Amino acid sequence: MNTRRPLRLVIIDDHAMVLEGLKAVLGRFAGRVRVVGDALNADDALPLVASLDPDIVLSDVRLRGSMSGLDLCRRLIELAPHRKVLLLSAYDDEQYLFQALRAGAVGYLLKSVDGEGLVRQLELVAAGETVVDTTMAGRVAASAARLQSGEFWPGAHLSLTQRESEVLGLLVAGLSNRAIAAKLVLGEETIKSHLRAVFRKLEVNDRAGAVAAALREGIFR
Image (cartoon, rainbow, N blue to C red):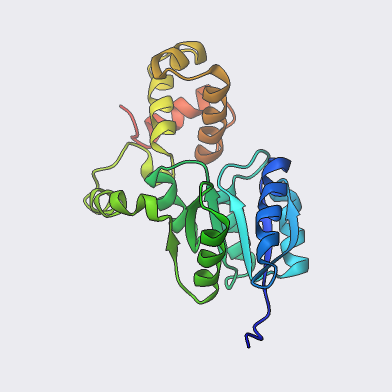
């Protein structure tokens, strides 16, 4: 007979429907995992995690507000080095995976994972393993080799994603948000979102500051 208690989990996602969906899915595995708390943003998550001290924190990578999921992961581990933070994302992109691992996360999973798969990965994390979504495994080794040899995109060393680097490069070239959106075939709101992330990572407040930082750091010349 299995007498092991269920894993205690806190979930952070900025979409209430996603939170409710995850709780509903995990509710089918109550003997193995129990959701003890949830939050819609990092600011609420910090005191919640501190008070509940869960076995694992499951957070979306991209959160709206003052901190991203990556920022939250770093902060949680700064406050409690034993903390296990597993990042969940809709983005099948190894650049986010590497950033997650550099931030101290114990793994990176895609939101397409099914309930049984998610619970199994949570149990592996609880046992001390680092987990990576199986659908990404084929590309991770090649990307790791490029990263090791320095063959990565401009600004990667400052935690810019490849897309953020592309947006910053076009900003340095003098393009407007509308022109950048047209060039990358993206919506203007998406470009604004990327720019907010760039500003945060470069620790600047506006476009001029981002251009100056990019030139000062030698990201683009």
